[in-house]
Length: 290
Figure 1 (tube, rainbow, N blue to C red):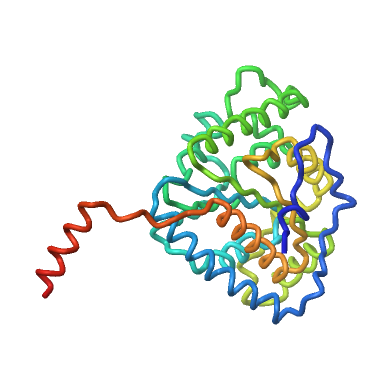
Figure 2 (cartoon, helix red, strand yellow; figure 1 turned 60 degrees about the vertical axis):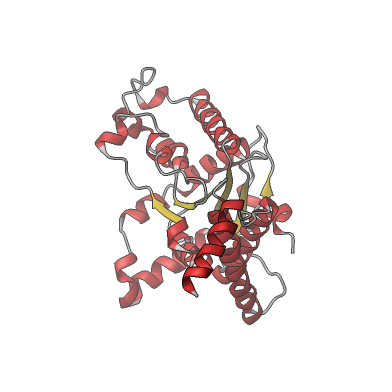
C-alpha cells in the first residue's frame, strides 16, 4: 500500500483547496484487518528504530498538526507505543513562555530536534507560528518584531517570509541527517462537533473539554485558509506534508503508520559492524565468562 503518493501534498505557490479535500476515507478494509496491519507496523517501527538508534548517524522528526479533537494525542500513542523511550522524544508546544518570546519563533523547537539516533515527535510545532498566530495576529505584539507595530502589518509577504525561514531550517535539518515527516490530520467540522459532544456527555471524557476550543472552532474558515496557504508552500522533497483524512481514527492511524514505516525503510538503517577491537574483546570476555 503506497499511501505516501496518495496523501502527499506537492510544493506549490497555490493554495490547497481543503474544501474539496475529503476528511473521510474508505479503504475497503474491515476494522479488524486495519488493527492487524497497525499492530504489524508497530513491530516493524520498533525494529527500524532500534537500527537507527544503534547506528547513531541520523535522526527523524515527525510533526503533527491539526484542529482540536482531530486525534493527535491518541494517534501518537497508538502508532508509536512500541518504540524504545531511550531513543524517542515527544514534545508538545503550547503558548510560548516569556523566555521563548524573547527569541526567534524557531528557537524553542530547535532545542527539541532529535539527536543522531533518535526519533522525535512534535505534537503541534513551529507551524503554530503560521497558523494560530496568523488567525490571531495580535499575538505578534508580544514578539517584539522590528517591522511589526500593529497586527495589520502582518501582510502576505510576512507569512511568506516565515514559510521561507521554515523551509531553510528544515533543509538544514536534512543536510544534517534529519528525516522530516509532517502530517496534517484533516478532521471534518461535523466530526469535530461530534467529538466535542462526546467530551461533554461522557464523564470519563469531560477532562478533555476546553471551552476555549469552541472559540477557535468559530474561526474554522480562518484556520482552513491558513492551512491551505501554508501546507503547499512548506511541503518539500526533504520535508513533505501528508494530509490524512481524520474522521475515521483507526484507518488514519494505520495509514500514518504505513507512511512512517515506509519512510524509515527507505533510510535503510543498519546495525553497525563490529570492529576489530570488539572481536578481541569478545574473545577475552568469553574466556572470562567461561
